Image (cartoon, rainbow, N blue to C red; front, side, top):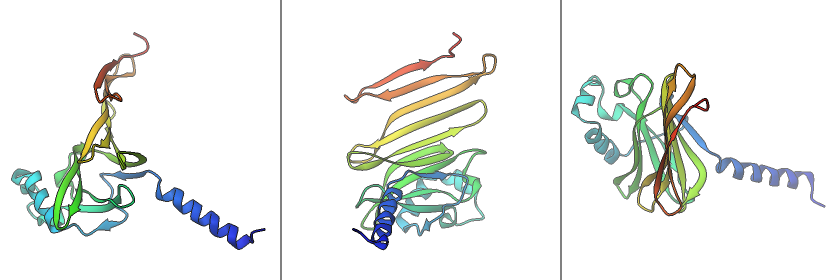
Length: 195
């Protein structure tokens, strides 16, 4: 019969293994809990990606001061930097752009980005060995959500839902796009149930 200490140790290891595979959620308006130092090649790429006009609105800050990153595990061996603005001058009122970079030596490779979102979730579900990514943004009158999976080179959208509120009927209307098993994308319209 196992001792109480051995059972407690097994429970602790099992619990940590579950937590390690849990979904991770990040708000674009909140600071990262575990910020990582951003490699210079990512800052260089972001400076070009964001553009001079957007950077001009943040002119009191150096490019390296405009972003923060968190290092994520996409699988057991693949790591990537989730990067977002740390300054609101690069964001709209409710959304910010986000980028996901993998490092190949000292070179940064952009593997996913979203020009405007409120929330990014790195899911525990995987496809082609990498964790899926979900993002969403919404306001009172409209919103969107999408899910992305790894295609062995970068992330590809496999689900999208864009909606708006019908104020008269008090329901969501919109367009939903789903990727089928054969890779084809299928669209359908979401209507109010009263119709």
